[in-house]
Length: 228
Length: 194
Image 1: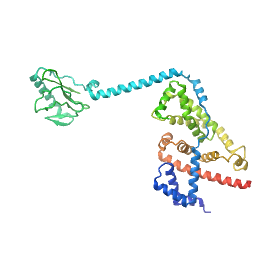
Image 2: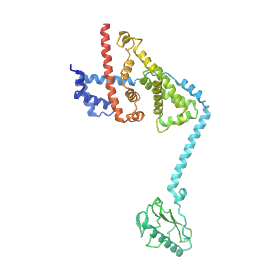
Image 3: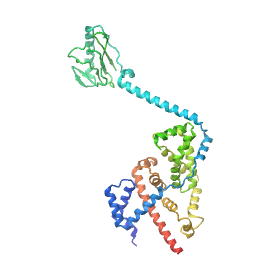
Image 4: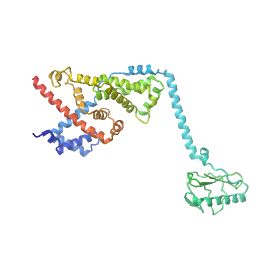
């Protein structure tokens, strides 16, 4: 005997209706699909019946059965296992927790801002340390000191991570802008006229960091560098 | 309820605030009950599971992971309790279900039952749901009743999204077939009574 239902189920238009129904319930039915589904429903009585029954099932499923109110039973049960705190105490605990969260958030934000504005304050490891004795004794001493530093730069430059060239030396990663009160004594033409921190990749060992810092009153400046 | 608002309620309930716990219960008990009724087909079982799930959750709020939704956590615990209860009381639950759905010893198609109890849309729906496997039933209830997105159902049930879609497709077909059978049965019953 021929199974007419099965034969109908396998018909292309039927399969298409099933696919369109799936798309409709998944919220993925586009305008074209909606039109095809609508046409199928109009043309095919069986498709119309299937759509209607599916819709009925889904809508019935969405109607929630009346639920008993179990609140008091649950609260009593929980209370017998773990006593409820008074409203005042629990409010204090909650406020305390929220305040602690805000304090932590504020501290983190402050640390991030400070790190951006003045990295040496929050990143002790990245702060330049005076490895040279280059202090403000006047232009000649500074110039000598800078030459010493440059010697170090020359030594390290070939093994450091590259960057843009400034003068004869590599200037990399200008993350921190120099804050200089007055022109710095640099050897003209060898580094740059503009005081610029020379910074190689801080994540790499053998990194050097040359920076200029202002001094008051004299033309001389302190040059710091550090090796990571 | 907004998630931020819910997080505050959870914090307060964890600190022992009864009012906060009450608001959490009121916000979720209806949907959890509906889910359990459809899953188990038994209002009394659903009631027990809902109560126990809330008690478990409210006494272990410190274990709540805020990256998940509270409802997902609650539903997961409820389902686990239901599965455990089914395993523990399987013969009892099964016979109860048969009695409650089939009536007292009548054949399923007998007019006494169909005339009295089957004339109810909810029962027809439950009959259709009963034709599904446990997984299919849960997928259908979560998607169509609870309006969970497919991705969340997949995560909750630990299966690929494609499997969820396939379950939905097959389940709708199966339920429709069951509905058609019920309609046919009713028509034949109506003829008997005529």
